[in-house]
Length: 354
Ligand code: COA
Image (cartoon, rainbow, N blue to C red; front, top):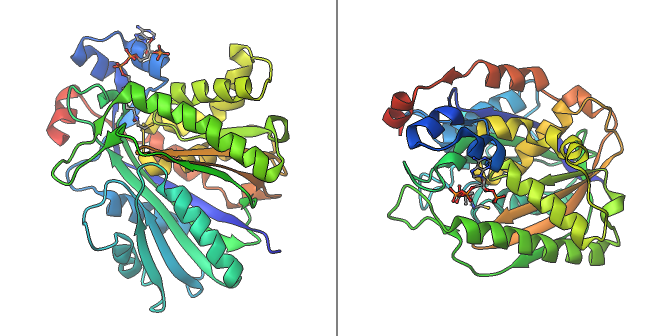
């Protein structure tokens, strides 16, 4: 059986950001609510001339630098902030990068889960033809509305990934646990630009489906908590991912970690998310790059557990093995410079952009 997974990945986020302390003071909220209560520091803000396609194109440009394009025969574009109800966003990427004519292109939607659906679909296509390369993009702009309860958990970003056999970054292991359950925890009807969310309910459902999908994953694969060295979660805001990990330990009858050990385990995966905010379907995979680029140790051979959740709702738990020499294909300095060089907006500029 061939080894399949993520060969390379690159992320892009908006050039503009607002400090959550600025938002807190505009809203008359204690800044600790955002920095401690949600675990967020800044959030990326898209200017009016940026959308999921320009974000995706920038991530793809970095990903495809020096890459032979001839074997890319599939573009899977995951988003829940699409710009068209009919035409797949990946069609624009196909033209912009002059990708091969014999290429299939598809847009995927299921809230923040759809990149994982794209990953699993892409990996199964690779088993059919091991020469093929698949471009998987997750790109989203999270918008909840000015002065709404979700406002502090907005953000914008895209991640582009190349899926291949014998991947250099992370091999995705077969076997996963997945669950669907119809719920109105978060949705965006066709007539709205901003999402509607029942935030508390959404967090409860995220945690409930974590237990259900992890149990199924354990049953299918035989793997338990202790078989994983790292844990990544969909990150609408880092504090929820921390709660998720505590819940996973509780369900696995693992003794509680003190807050320093919990932070040491999860913090590397949160570094980019704390600065960018929620990127919906891209968030889990931005967490993966954050872990690989921010962890100080060599993680070769380590197993990572992934929890993907999309409101509405569908979730999946799966795992991957970090490949030897993965560091050679990272773009850590590019990503760090991208975030460090952003223009920080005043509150008035943020509102004008909005
Ligand atoms: N210092 C430290 N922590 C503080 C604080 C302060 N001064 N003030 C509040 N907090 C904590 C609260 O205790 C709470 O933590 P807890 O949940 O562990 O108790 C946290 O900050 C948030 O406060 P809360 O009053 O619950 O905030 P809120 O009612 O404004 O809503 C969300 C928070 C997350 C529900 C809201 O931002 C939201 O709906 N976001 C979108 C969520 C989403 O994307 N869901 C879909 C995908 S999963």
